[in-house]
Length: 107
Image (cartoon, rainbow, N blue to C red; front, top):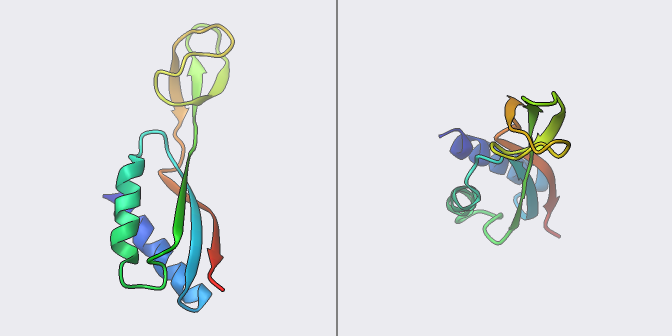
């Protein structure tokens, strides 16, 4: 699973940069990523480190879809109707699976 490697890699970078103590992290996840799974992975990776008590905020990002009916591009997830015509869209650019938005060192 790519999410496990991404979370573990980010955590190690935060710990190195912060001197070993992380207070909080905000990540953006793709609409098709299971937030509960990301939280579980974070919890497992942070256990026993200076990030164990860190707050993890997950924000769901948006794919870019193009409407079959009117051609409009819009943000959403699979099956999100077009905001202009309520038509069906196709994902033309998927959101990144996991992106770090911000993080904060403790102290």
